[in-house]
Length: 424
Ligand code: GDP
Ligand code: IMO
Ligand code: MG
Image 1 (cartoon, rainbow, N blue to C red):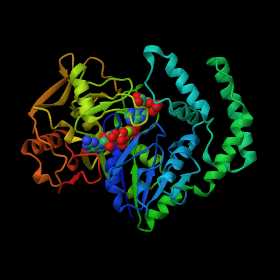
Image 2: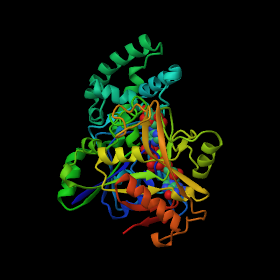
Image 3: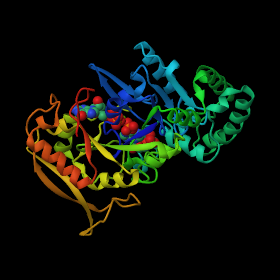
Image 4: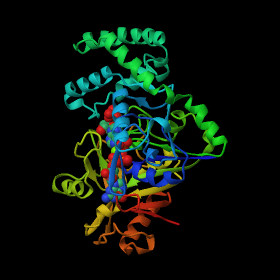
């Protein structure tokens, strides 16, 4: 009957999966629409931690169906590993999962090229997850990609893969000086993977619109964040998909008129992993302190995340490009030990205030104007109601709401499903 969307408003790892898990209790279908195994989505239920990369976090609800939409790039190895790991934890994926036949496949050579380019880029590296994401989306756009639907017929796969390898082997050998990929081995493994997933493969746009028309609810699970969007992020230090609302429609194929809420997930501070500008970043002991308090280490690569103060200009930008109807503010408990908190309220360049987050994502030479607020200096992880939060904490939340111009409807005070406060 209606669709809801959850998007990251910063540079990823905002706590999207934690909020998606909270919202999924009432949802029939949870859908990934972009990105791939570069995502690391953590959910904590009854003290058990689950980290998802490709499979939507809604799989933890036994009655929900999970969909990998056409906009996702599907890595057969990563998907199979994740499915196996969940099976070991008694979670059935096979029977509750639907995969789009239009999904592009991440080939091992995409990972090889991604890693090779990163390792040889020196100061020009992006800091990718080396999961082959950008290379796979590049081939999609170049129209030399392999899709899930191509795996369904041996002859079709033979023909398509042969064409792709002719081009990619030329690139591997002549451009990167890397060994070429053998056709037979890759063909066999893809054919086998195709057989494994065949019962799950569907026209997911049709499937989802039918569900919506019959009164079912759909939640679209964003990966990464607005600052990493290929168009609206800090290019070239971005991922290779549209992480924002437009990407959710294009990557799921739902009729946009079903979309009723767009929840932006904002961490009460900011983190970033990989290279790229970060105006409110904290360095040295200040950065280390926030990283340790927030346990900010990558859920996919284990890399330490860069940390800094809340950046209003970034979230305002996310509010605009996503059409946010509400914000879920996460990890506010992490700020409890601070005497005072800073909020980045605006950008200046050459002493002149910028009207908005720069559309070219170029943040060089930016200085940030800060506001300072008193902290609350008490643990809040156990608090269940907004009214029971310390006054200074409510003031911080209300000030962020005012500055971002979007109502804050959910406040998260811990990693668990139960650590979630809904605001009236
Ligand atoms: P995602 O990629 O946006 O889903 O976020 P990640 O899972 O990569 O990173 C968020 C991390 O913060 C995970 O370890 C979560 O368990 C944790 N987390 C989420 N919300 C909260 C919160 O409100 N408080 C605390 N302390 N941890 C949280
Ligand atoms: P979730 O969904 C944080 C970053 C990488 C790198 C850039 C490009 O967990 O929020 P890529 O491998 O996509 O080509 O890398 O994007 N990145 C993420 N950062 N969270 C993520 O996902 C990310 N996915 C990619 O670190 O800077
Ligand atoms: Mg993550």
